[in-house]
Amino acid sequence: MSDINLVPHEEKATESFESLKKRLSVASVVLLVLTAVFTMGVLVFFTTQVSKRTQLFAKVEESAQAINSYRQQEELLVVAKDKVGLAEQILGQRVEYHKTFADFAKLVPQGVYFTDIKFAQGKIIVNGKAKTSAEVAGLVSSLLSADGSKIVSNVTIDSLAADETGTYTFSMQAQSAKQD
Amino acid sequence: MDLSAVSKATVKAQSSLDIVKYSSLAVSAVSILVSLLILFLVVWPKLSETLQIKNSNSELTQKADSLKQKAGILSRLDQAELEEQVVASEQLLPSGKDTFLLISQIERAAASSGILLNRVESTPGLLDTASGGASGNPAAPSAGAQTEIAPSIKVSVSLTSGYSSLLSFLNNVLTIPRVVSVSDLSVSAASSEGSSQLKASMSIIAYFKELPTDLGSIETPVAELSQSEKDRLEKIINTGLSAAPAVPQVPVGREDIFAPF
Image 1 (cartoon, each protein chain N blue to C red):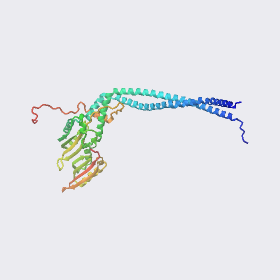
Image 2 (image 1 turned 180 degrees about the vertical axis):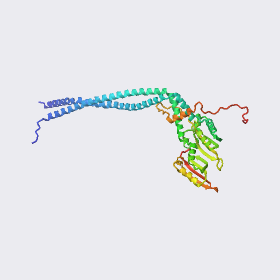
Image 3 (image 1 turned 60 degrees about the vertical axis):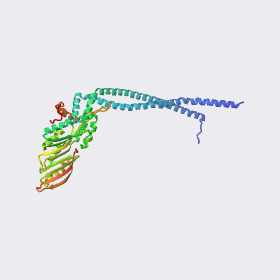
Image 4 (image 1 turned 90 degrees about the vertical axis):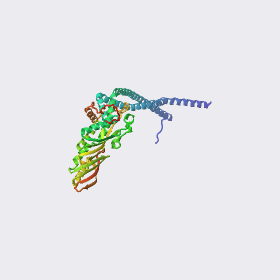
C-alpha cells in the first residue's frame, strides 16, 4: 500500500528552506571563525618573522662592525694564507732530486755505475756501465721491484752492449714516478 | 467584481513574502562572502609576504652566523704573530721576481756545498712585476705541471762537483726560504770512463706572487692557516727573520767605467 503524504507541499518547501538557512548560517559562522583564527595566526607569524628579521639585522650589523674593527688582522691573514697556500701546493708537487738519488743508491747493484742521468719532462734517461750482464739484470729487477716502482715505471732498455773487457754499457729510460 | 485587481494584489504580496524569506539568507551569504574576501585579499597576500620574510630570514641567519664565525676567527688572531707570518710568507713567495736575491741564494748554497758553479744564466726580463712583469714572464716553459700554478723565473745552472757535494747542493737549494723547484736535471761523469767528478746542469725555478689587491666583500669567509702552513712559516721565522736574505751591498763609484777590475 502506498504511503499517504499527509504533509502539505507548502509546508515541505518551508521545512527544506529552513534547513538550508540553518546550514548556511552554520557554514558562515564556521568560516568566520576559521577566517578569524587564520588571520590571527598569520598576524602572529608575520609579527614573529618581522621581529626576528629586526634582530637578525642587528646581529649582522654587530658582526660587520666587529669584522671591520679587525680589518688589519684580516688583511694580514689573507696575504699570509694566499702566499703560503700557493707555496704548499708548489712544494707538494716538486721533485726532491737528492731523495731520488738516495733512493736510486739503495737499488743500484754494486757492479753498476751511471755515466750520466737526465731528468726531463717526467722521463729519466740513464746511461751506465756494469761489470756483468747479471748486474744489469739485477738493476732492472731492482727498478721493477716494489721499491723501484716508487721511483720509476715503464722501464725500457734502449741498448746493451759488452766490450772486449766484458764490461757492459747500457742505456735505459723510464717514466719518473713524480713529474718534474 | 474586478478579479484581476485581486490577482495582482496576491502576486505582489507573494513576491514581497519571497523577498523577506530570501533576505534572511543574505546575512549568512554576505558573511561567507566577506570571509572569503578577507581570506583571499588580505590574509593570503600577507601569508605570502610572511613566507618571503621567513625565507629571507633563513638567509639572514646563515649570513649572521658566517659573519659571527668570521668575527670570532679574526678576534682570536694575534696581530704580532700575523705580522711575523706575513714577513715569512713574503720570504717564501715574494711579491716580485727578486732575481738577484735568488742568484745570491744559489751562490750561497753552492758555496756551502763545495761545488763549482760553471755557469749561472737567467733572463729576468722586466724587473718591475707590479707594472706587468709577472704576466710578461708567466713561468718557465719546462717547469711541467707547476707552470700553471704561479709566475716564476728560471735560472739555469751548470756545475762541477763530487757526488755528495751535488746532493748537498740539491738539498741546500731546496731548503732556501723561497719556494723553488729544480727541473731538467742532467748529471754526467766528467770523463767517459767514470769519474768521481760530475758535471751537472739544471733549471732552478723560483716562484713569486703579487700581493692580493682587495679583501673581497665582508661576507667572504676567512680561512685560517692550516697546521702545516703554520709549521712552514714557523720554520722560516725560527731561522731568524732579522737575518732575511739580501743581496750583498757593494761600494759604488768609479773614475773610469771602462777600466777592467
